Length: 138
Image (cartoon, rainbow, N blue to C red; front, top):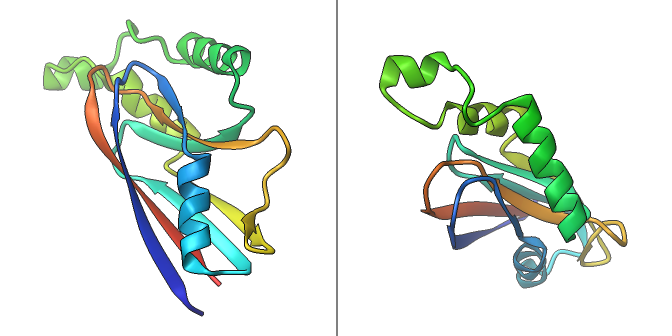
């Protein structure tokens, strides 16, 4: 099974920023030449996550608010106390959402729904340079 690898690099703002990766992932799929297979998208870092969603302002706001209710940035976290840190909520949110997604490739295209995009969520509490690996297996 041939494997084609690509790397997306981007600067993020953190603080729950959600970035649409769909065009970058689709570009790696096109470069691979794969007609059928799977694209795996993996975010490097323990305060990042990858998922799919309808990427529009209301959906972004709803997801951001839901995660804040579930794991508040100002919560009482052992990680912060033990490590004199401020981003435990970021690690916890990333763990719940997960660092990767696998998306079928059908006819040389990502098999996403009409309103479905691949997104990166950066939960850290500061801007960062980020890397996302894309592997296309066909």
